[in-house]
Image 1 (cartoon, rainbow, N blue to C red):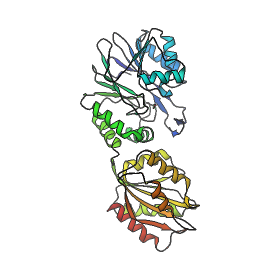
Image 2: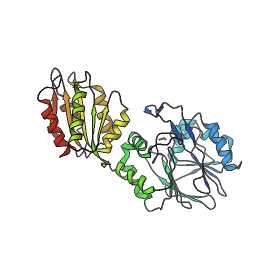
Image 3: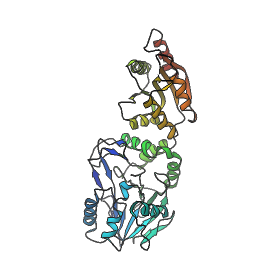
Length: 384
Ligand code: FEO
């Protein structure tokens, strides 16, 4: 698969993986991307995950026509990309490993070798000439680990973006990019919006014509659409109008009220209501929706003076990722003494610029004659 005349895709698809990074469900698998730049010198961009080394090295040999690569550029040391550095280095003993100084420390820690004597440090702004192609390194700490370096091919104007602009799913799956790219972004780099925004500032104006991430499809047209979404996501901005209702329900009463609220919101013209059962649905989807829409309703039960544990975990995901700038409403249930709304608000205390709805729907075991009016009032506040 050619990206430009000189840049060829040599990555692999993992269709067997159940959990990416040991906790993200990947129903459509995962791609570990690697690229090769063919010039007077040959540069390989990253390796692939464990178990795919033979397939990757075979593809690499086919792409180079048997020529030995001169450089392996390691942009990110997480093992889904770095697991085959040693195999590459053994097969091509004259090749030089190019990476950030922090990466070489990680190589030693992960694989017992920091390639002293056959390495080049890819410091920020430094260039590497392959002949016709000049590569410029862009340090991108915390997108997604501290050692991350992106690489800009100044000749073909291709950005090798490491984990940024990645997506869950193998490359042979035909699906909407934004849905699984958004779940990936908020799950994996969502905590580091500031750092992502700083890199976007640096790449803006470079005249990028293609983006080659380490996961998901390489992007060769409509670059502004993808960078535009990354601008929104990294600034914690609202992408779409709508309300996410994230709920837990032990005996179905809280769920019933959450569903009724969804109906009322739709009747009142809300363009989108995203329902997430925090026990049964994918937590990463719920996190993604919470960041996508501008309004969030949290509905849960009081649980021994605290709240139902899956809701506690969900709120922790939001706080951890710097959730901010949203309107939040509560639905609380409790058979002894409902106090879940207060507990949830306390857990969200570190979130900035939150506009809390005055109405918190209160259920005492089951909805009663007064519940509908509270739902109406909450819906009006959410849409007001
Ligand atoms: Fe795809 Fe952060 O590794």
